Length: 291
Image (cartoon, rainbow, N blue to C red; front, top):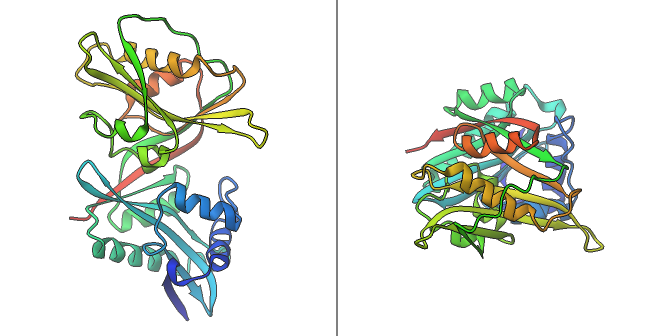
């Protein structure tokens, strides 16, 4: 007998068993411990009351992690992982989980449902399309271990440090970008604002530096790097930001940029590819208008 429960009604052990079984044999390893599972929930703003676990005869066999945020005045939901244990795939559990998830979204007043799917995962993409999701962009998870070129020292613009929360107040902030690139996923990070000669904000970036157990800086995660689209010097502004971010970083620090929307951030994407960033994961970005 299949039963679907809210994660908040389950134990952490059941949730981790459901996750690890659901993503067994996935395209890349994402097995979690209780500690890393909790870190994912908190770090990504995922909700135990909106997430669900499927049980078959009291055994956890499927999971969907969900979160909801207000983004530019829109209630936006994110499916942060749908998994079904290998022995129970093609049995309708994935369909049941999606039906339950969309009902939860309706109850929560969600206006826009979003998710990402690995580009090669045609079966998952077809399932989501069956429930009304549409592909709105292609995403690439970019990485580089090479030194970022020192583009320029430009006195024309002023660069100020701030916090990611402040970036969300900019009129050209891309709040409806993929969930993991939004400021809430980088709230413990750092941010930069570029101002023109009149003091107007014309560009921003926010990122997070990751340190190992000894305090060594081992990775920088760049979430967004954008310029005011009304400007005719957007590439110049982006180069200023990348120069500033990279100037204090050792050459061998791993630099990653998660889920860059190729069409929605074309200038940023083109520049990152130009300076040597390479895709290690390709996904599709899918959305469903709920109301």
